[in-house]
Image (cartoon, rainbow, N blue to C red; front, top):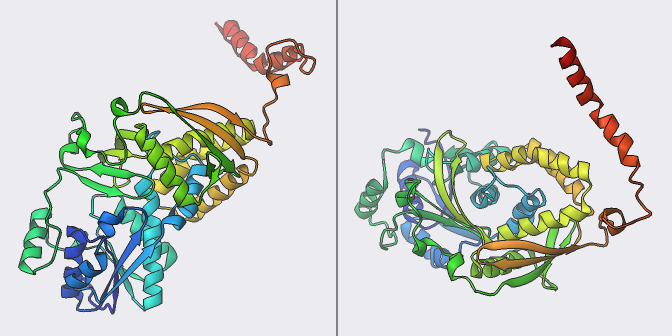
Length: 404
């Protein structure tokens, strides 16, 4: 363990882990430690009093940054333009938040003359990869300290004992039988009672959504306007990215939209059960796909969709600042130039249904699509089209018969 370090910037949340880490870093490296907290929409409860808490734990300096608009504009929106989803279910709220927090750390380290960065992610999870790949991509000169991989503590009990021994002020709350992480895109739950994939999550666990059974008995309609693939307005009111997502989180949560329970494949190799609430993101993805259905060229859509699993993996694995993700993003963004218009949705007891879409750039032509009589499309043209496309199938069957 190298101790040739002059100043450390720690990704600090104020919880037990990072409170212990802050004190441990000071004790171990005998240098100034800056507590860095990024507001990505985790709520006032988590950020309340965080400066005082960090200073009382031994921080030499505390930096709190409001990154909510940047988070949605520069991370969530690009992923939404791709309809990004990991393993067909997860909208990657945590995956998208870690790179912007790590970027803020790096910029803080550069501004304050620190030569090391640290995080509280464990050696079993994905977050350690997301933090550290971002550090390496943005400033390779920074030393990286991952306490969970190098200290002697084995679990929460050890941390609590260390905190008591060193008079570290940590929140004294009733132990929740699971862990949670929240930002503007979602809230995630894992661990504890959720480690049994057969056990249904308790209803009192959920924060952003009511259960579909408790949702209103009447549907809620809303309209979302898109410009070049990005949502810009709800029900005619133009909103900033963060405000728009907040609005959709509220209305989606009231209608029981966006709950997901899945067992996913972590990058480090193990399977993990996670439960997520992503009301606004679920609504946005549904609306965006509807907007694309009338404005996006077929072959462009199919090409983009063929790359979607790879693009989503890049984000989930922590490669946001990689050249391959940026190259794919350029292709995706180019595909969105005509994805503008209005989508109408119907929300009802956990269901998000598209009930209307229109655009001045629509490729949908009722005169071509009609099943009634028309003078635009010559149905006889289909005969040659089918013959040419079926030629290889005929040849394969004839050869099979010939050779027995």
